Amino acid sequence: MSPAALQPPPPGLNYISVVQPSLGILMVALTGTAVLFPLLVILFFFSTKSLRRKPIFVMNVISIILGLTLGISFTFIMYQAITNPSNLLTRFAYLFPAFSLTLIPIFVDSILLLRLLIVYPFHATPHHVFILIFFPLMCIKAARIVDVGLFIDLVISAMSKAIPNPVTNIQTGWTNQIAFLKAESFLQVIDNVITSCLFLYRLDIRKMLVQHPSENSFSRELPESYTTSTIRGLFWIAISNFIFPLLLGIVELVFMFHDPSFIHGIIVGIINAYVSIIGVLLATVWAASVRWTEEHHPSVRENNAVSTIHFTQGYSRNNSAISMADTIGSMVSPGMGDLLHEETMVLEAHNKSKAADLV
Image (cartoon, rainbow, N blue to C red):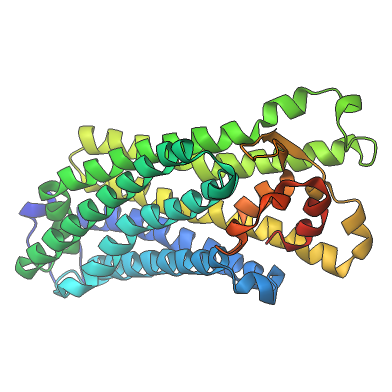
């Protein structure tokens, strides 16, 4: 029996075909919400006053708020579908999950675009290269915003004719407006592919990991296990920020094209949103914890690999390598004013002093 054919059950009862999808979505939404709360506390605990004034911190907090809105709104709707299936929800009740579910990937990808701007700074990148990198990405972002706006408008308009069963309402919106969701997921995959390739190319971690310890300038000062674990940590942060959302976007596209039911597509979409938020947030928390440790244990600052490890050759005019300080700065992107620093930003002598302001 399809959800559309269901009639209201007797008072105090509900159909398994309604409870099962509602319970699955509710559990995923609750799990994601439960993970975000401690991460939010950790973010504020390790952050400093200077970090809290920077755009990346504000954007992380906004992404967490969007994630909490997503989880709470889906939990409320699915709870109503299970316990009170005859209650007619207003269309604004569907606005919050539709808005947050489609906006979160775009917002998080905007944070990643800001990080990409750090490793390809305007003042140190040839103008034609800068335009070739960021103009297509900005066009993709604009197309995604327009697509999401049209989707939300059509979904909310259709909710004026909604029936009491939330599962039926969501299935109807999913079926009628699936083309917009396919377009958004497809654009997200393209966006993540371009961004991840550009970002991971600049890290060039593979070359550093295979390089002999005696060839590394920092190996004489730091234990090999420490520096290797630091590089690997950054690598997995990059993977969680770019690759995992990309793979989940592909899985979401598969469900959209081959599964007419909304259940699996919505669940993968919610997981994708939370993975994107958590991946970006963990990068910020990691770098903030490094800064917090240095401030409370000054002896660690001198032996910190953060300010001494180098990455791929940059486009700077003096042909200096981009240091790990700048790359970690991209993980917790400083304000736009920091982006306008002159060529001394890439000098090694200045990198050590800048390491104190990574987050």
